[in-house]
Length: 163
Image (cartoon, rainbow, N blue to C red):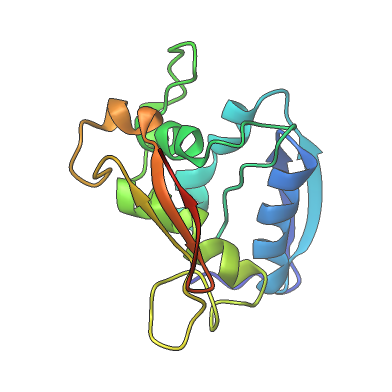
C-alpha cells in the first residue's frame, strides 16, 4: 500500500457521486483530493484498474438519474471495458468479475467506514443479499449487463421477488 498522507490526488469523475466515492477512498488514506469531473461515466471508470493497482479502495455506484441505476451495467463496463455503444474503453483497465463485484459491495462499505457491518456476507453483518438469474462469475462476461435480480433480501427480510 502506498502512503498517501500529505499527498494531493486529482480525481476525474463523470458525476459528483463517482467523484465523491473515489475522493472518500483517497481521503480515508489521508490524502487531499481535488476532483475534476469528466465528460462521461466511461472516462471515470477508466481509472478503476489504475486505482486498484495503487492499492486504493474505490467504490462504484448506480446513482440515478446521473447514471444508470442498473449496477450490472457498471460491473459490465469494469470487466469488459466497452461502453453501452460498444466503444473500446481500454482493455488494459479491465478488472476481474470478482473485483468488479467488490467495487460495488465491500469497497463501498469500506470507504464509508461501514465494512464491519456490511459489504460482505458474514455472520453478524447486515443480511442484505440478492439472488440473480445468472451466475455472473461463470457466464460469458458480455452477458453480465443482461443480469436480472430475482430476489432481494434487506436486513434479513424479503423485500422483492421477481414474478
